[in-house]
Amino acid sequence: MSGDFSADVIIVGGGPSGVGAALELRRRGVARVIVLDREPDLGGATRHCSHSPFGMREFGRVYFGGAYGRRLTREAADLGVDVRTGHSVVSLGMDGVLTVANARGVETLSARRVMIATGARETPRSARLVPGDRPLGVMTTGTLQSYVAFYDQMPFRRPLIVGTELVSFSAVLTCLGRRVWPAAMIEAEPYARSRELYTWLPTAAGIPVLKGAELVDIRGSRRVEAASIRRNGRVSPIVCDGVLLTGRFTPEAALCRQSPLGVDPGSAGPAVDQDGRTANPVYFAAGNVLRGLDTGGWCFREGRAIGAAVAEDLARDGDAGAAVPVAFDDPVKLVVPGLLRRGGLAAPALRDFQLRVTRRVRGRLSLELDGKTVWSRDGAWMPERRILVPIPPDAARAEQVRFRLAEDA
Ligand SMILES: Cc1cc2nc3c(=O)[nH]c(=O)nc-3n(C[C@H](O)[C@H](O)[C@H](O)COP(=O)(O)OP(=O)(O)OC[C@H]3O[C@@H](n4cnc5c(N)ncnc54)[C@H](O)[C@@H]3O)c2cc1C
Image (cartoon, rainbow, N blue to C red; front, top):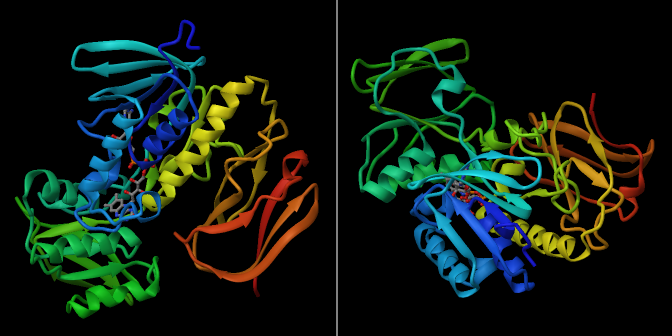
């Protein structure tokens, strides 16, 4: 039953999480499901990843990024999802009313439920405040991979790679795949931000991995000619013809920020409860918009689980009730879900809290419900690593929910 609405559910974003949700909604008999994406094809950030692996757990085989996007497109067509690419959502209204721009102009669409699945993006130079000249050749991994995947162009021969997150090694793979040897890989922290193990890749290829090294200057009149790094208090130049600023993902949540939904100060994405529902019960969210980067497979499964919750929510159409925020302090950076609702579904979409920390830290992480510790663990916690804590069955009944991380002396 769609009534006066354009659809039962509109999903904003056709990456793995949005398509995962759309497929699940259709499998569960939700009649009218629209996926809107501003790009010409489905697949989201996977479209420009010219390497594997994608799809193993959801489709039982390994795809390269482009082929994975095509598989999502086929699945959506087979299940009758109404896919509208080239459609950019420009505002979210209170009651599931969306303003959408496309080649024909601006239109208004509405739905009984809306899911935000707009992904995340790397932090570009402007937001990192890197000093120096403004030559061509400074870009993020996503931009580099788009040049390669969509235009068959490699914009440099000897870039400097800044960062050691998982995506930074994806940048190394893209370079090596095109016989481009980066001048070096640098990391401001004294450790690799992803697993130390991954540094074997650049090391085996003869690319120096310099930890504790900070980018302090970029030089070049038209194109990049050199970059300066500070390491052990000394500034030294590195000759390079490009600078790849990798990682430091932030949710693509401008739509939420400018709408009544708002964003969570920790994750910078919309806060959701254990069913993926935001503070406004018409809106749900899933995938990287919730917290910055996770893998494609994780986002697909998360989208599917929250899609199932949306289907159930439509069927019961009851009041979800007020939400209790999940509190935490530094060095915890974010917690998803950041809300818990007493009136949530019997089987919640999210079984675990997902946490990230701001820096490498050792100590005891604990969860308190109404002042009582119900879970704790000692460990060494790394930034950019997913930390999972099971959501206790009675957590949604608590009036105060708090994570603490007590650092070892
Ligand atoms: C460079 C790079 C390399 C990666 N390598 C791997 C890898 O090797 N393996 C792996 O598992 N994962 C990898 N990932 C991560 C993987 O791509 C993401 O986890 C996954 O794509 C996230 O899915 P998502 O649906 O949450 O968001 P996205 O895939 O980012 O999709 C979001 C979609 O929303 C659309 N959108 C945004 N705003 C609007 C709007 N206002 N209106 C309409 N549409 C909008 C975008 O166009 C996009 O299609 C990589 C990511 C990057 C950036």
